[in-house]
Length: 235
Image (cartoon, rainbow, N blue to C red; front, top):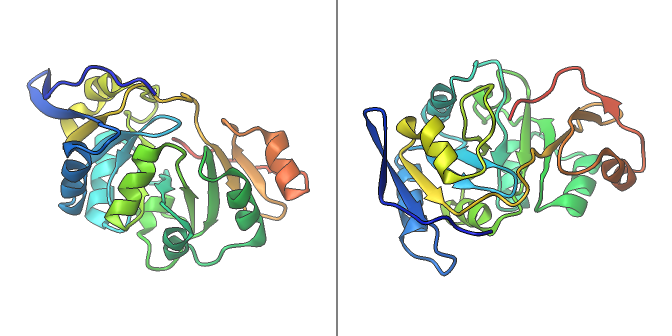
């Protein structure tokens, strides 16, 4: 992942935003990002797929800010990023065997697994429904944030709802930048494709969205043919 030249601030229209370059050896970026997240702020950061618009997933007010920044309808779910299985378990009512198999095979990586939402999790994350999509990101920057925060982070793409997803910090700045507290510039996202989304609450499990992990690979991991979900999860 090649990092673009970093700048301290950008101006879009009449709004200023702060962009910090990511140093693979540490630096100020992680500390500033954690500070913003803990204060209920929004932080855009790179993942293996696209730049994510992050907030503490269990902070309902922060999640509402994500929806507002993306101009996203409240009936649309947003995915959540986790550092490990322990964080995953805090979000879901149960972990079906199919979910565990998929995580064993494809995590960390571009596969989002939809399970039944735990009662303690904000309904807004699931678009008001009873499920939630979760993945462990395959880029160290993203996983390190989840691990250091100690909490799951909203991982929806950092773009206005319905517009192309961002693969660079500059794209984020020009789109949703004025509504974001901090942008971490880690260069261009390596995949530039959405995660594959699999709903394991259905029998058989269903493909909700095609993405970076092939349907064939998922079916091989599960040892069965997937159903086709009727409604696609937005990024």
